[in-house]
Image 1 (cartoon, helix red, strand yellow):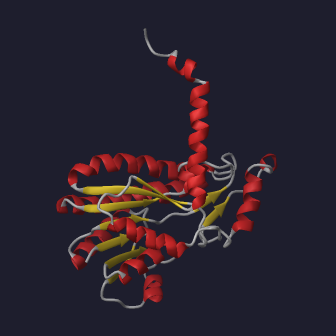
Image 2 (tube, helix red, strand yellow; image 1 turned 90 degrees about the horizontal axis):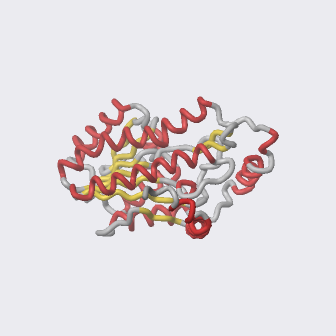
Image 3 (cartoon, one colour; image 1 turned 30 degrees about the vertical axis):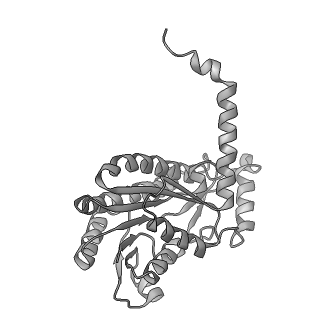
Length: 274
């Protein structure tokens, strides 16, 4: 029996992953700002521990990890899922907007990871699964600040994977495309005050997001099953893109980068010393 520690487990991807893990016979430490919401969703279960956790609070993160160890004796899989979106042009995002989304999506992920890793290091085993986005690989107008948080998650995971590998711990960053969750609802998304000059860029993205809400191509239930499959593999990847839209975005970016490198190769090489 493996022990999962999942942040943002009261709804969306977190709740679905928790349900799949329980169905597989594993134990789940499901965290949320209000743990009663987890009990309301799953009911009482001998392999489920609902824990209060605001990921931006370091003391709560440490207490949640200790509670998990006290109940189940170990933590095998950490899923850093908690996060939310910020829709708006880079200039439209206020300093407060930016600080809040980074506090949850980046600093919160770091806080929870720091709380859990000492236990994994003592075990010399574990999996860290960080939920990023297709926006963590290629940014879009209107999602600049949100994408910046996910770019940070990508870089952190890449370094973590190298640092943790000698200790028997694997780190993977998961890059979902657009899935039919409540991510585009007000509960999971903050929208910046619009500036008219960005109507054709960030404004168009706002319109598209409203049209796409609950009509996204990805099936969240299938994503949860994919996370279980990832946990089962003995040689997990550094990156796991999920969804045809993510694959298309990655391939398009590679083509663009390759073309730009070729066009600017001479100038790039000119800066080397003789």
